Image (cartoon, rainbow, N blue to C red; front, top):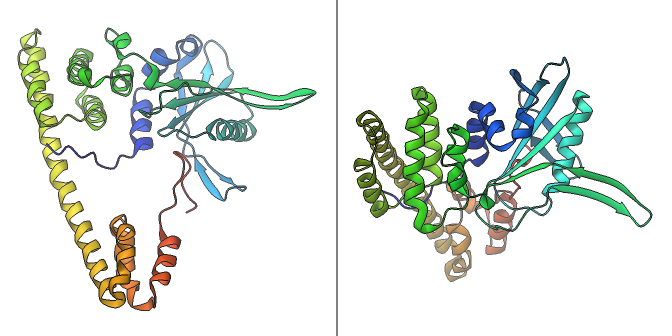
Length: 331
């Protein structure tokens, strides 16, 4: 199997998982909310987009659910943001998102942040404050679920699809990788979900806990020798084979894409070397860092650029903007 991880759309995967298993997610990670949530009243709102005029970016909400308090005719919002990389500015942005939704809908907003990255493992803040020497102007608190500080063993006996999937983003040591994947597979089979939801869970787990070839062989042996009923073992083996097939297909597809990208990079560098001679060597690292689309665009532009400095300027203007999770650049 290909051991190189592909580019992952974290926000899409987490949104699909939590939206599909929303009540289960609340029960596993927000048990206090589950006590007053009317599970039959859920209304997933369409994408809500706000413009951050100070940064010139658009913010698109991850998950926004309108729900009713159990036994009451009063509604509230649950705002869930997945943070797939660390950001010191996140608490301020979380407050901004909260304020925008509270202003727009005029009902209480329950803000939740999922910190889903592997590193760092320091405890993340769950509040945003504005203080002056003579008074505290603001103290905003949100619910923080930091997966890399949770112990996956605490969820082993929980028949909960959301918890089963998110186990693989918790504290998993290298020596536990194989066991966690086997346990996730066992839990999936135990849940007895319909085929579509089973594939969703299996796909999520396979994406975030990728085994190398040696690990996968041991994993298959563990599954085949597991102490489960014949029916459960058959289902586990079927899912294992689907994982293998998906991994091979993904590896082939990724290999083709990488080959095209690398070939385009080599072509661009040869053109630059032909035009600028040895001076083009300074451009090699930047060319090798380009993805396919900007590399093709540079190939079309090369003969209009009259110096290495002009190429560097073009690269600076056309490099993809690095943004925080959930805050894409302006469209």
